[in-house]
Amino acid sequence: MTYTDEVMEKVIQRNPGEKEFHQAVKEVLDSLAPVIEKHPEYKKARILERLVEPERQIFFRVPWMDDSGDIQVNRGMRIEFNSAIGPYKGGLRFHPSVYPGIIKFLGFEQIFKNALTGLPMGGGKGGCDFDPKGKSDNEVMRFCQSFMSELFRHIGPNTDVPAGDIGVGGREIGFMYGQYRKLTNRFESVLTGKGLNWGGSLVRPEATGYGATYFAEEMLKARGTDFKGKTVVISGSGNVAQYAVQKVNQLGGKVVTLSDSSGSIYDPAGITGEKWDFIMDLKNVKRGRIKEYAEKYGVQYFEGKRPWTLVDKVDVAMPCATQNELDLEEAKVLVSKGCIAVSEGANMPTTPDAAEYFVENKVSFGPGKAANAGGVATSGLEMCQNHIGLSWTFEEVDKQLHQIMVNIHANAAKAAEKYGQPGNLIVGANIAGFLKVADAMMDQGLI
Ligand code: NDP
Image 1 (cartoon, protein in one colour):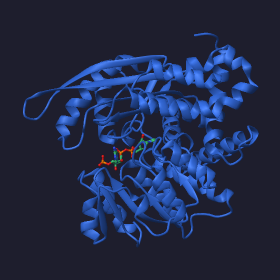
Image 2: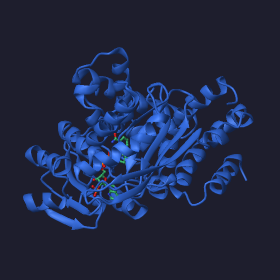
Image 3: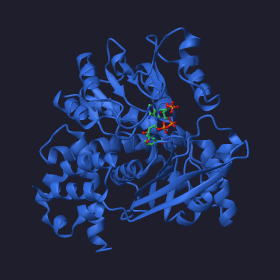
Image 4: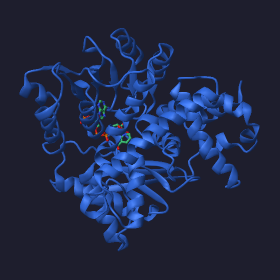
């Protein structure tokens, strides 16, 4: 058994039943085998064993009262994975599926993603098994206040700076920030994704979707092409998907699908102009279902279906909803319909066998920890603006975001080439992110 297999086996033993965490760790360890061979000092220092064990895990009760006066109890958590290169940084997810295996997979990925941005941010993630769907604004506020009433003592601008993720957008960040400020009597950069009037950054809402599209643009450029005239299939219809649609449109591509957890729509004419405004209102204000788009514009709706197999021709696929939402069978269909690039807006949306199939079939594949790093990178830019007390223009932040995505693509491609797997951005991103964190851990001794 190889050393990385041994580490993997221990991870499975020590974290039983946490299959998403196992999946995320396995992908990274598989990529790192040649690095460990070349650098025995990492093995001696047990860097891998230390990386897979979070520095700190916090679990807490979140009691709150619903609108009918009944008491509800949820479980909150924050997993602070690694702070070797900066304060813990990573989002909060509110979704009924949240349990330690999901938050650990996200926190682990975040270590490498944050390192890839080139900014000083460690990795962490948190969340709660609370379901914001169907809750009133008052219920969401009471829940967020209760959640922050415990979390506030564990976070801080130089310790841990959470952000949004599934189920946590501007509304939730606002309620949590208000409660943090009240409890600590401090106005400081402790959350990102804040409102523009109270410390937020321009481009933060757009950043993950824009960044995943810039990353796809780099992959297309490496193949000598661009977005013009390309047909793009996107899943999800939340924050990441919404702004991926907008940026693809701006770059001359045509987005023909979107989805939510109930089903998918297919609009062959493209989701542009007023139709995009409709989605923004439907999902962010009315909090309705994607089906309503099909009803309004008379296009096809597929109940319970994901978008990958619905269209006749695809050039680019961008999974932007959730983990493991694109499997091997769907990957085969995408390749057979002409797909040349996949850029993961979501975290780990492609199953490992599907990702392997894309790589084997020479599809340019941008793994989430590289392709969706624009969100956390712009959170880093928000923290930077907070620290210097200035706000940059939209153009300035967008320019920096764009450059960061170009750099991430170049660094991942370079690392893949150096370690003998040219074009494999999964391996390249894992290695480039790992080396930065591993060297920081080596420098800082056994802690
Ligand atoms: P949102 O909550 O805004 O949107 C999530 C979207 O995915 C919704 O359309 C939702 O549908 C759908 N979805 C969620 N869970 C499932 C599921 N189990 N099956 C099918 N569809 C599902 O979240 P974001 O857009 O912020 O996040 C999307 C992905 O991007 C996540 O993987 C997240 O970790 C990742 N990401 C987000 C970043 C950010 O800045 N926001 C940064 C980097 C990565 P429904 O409304 O029906 O639940």
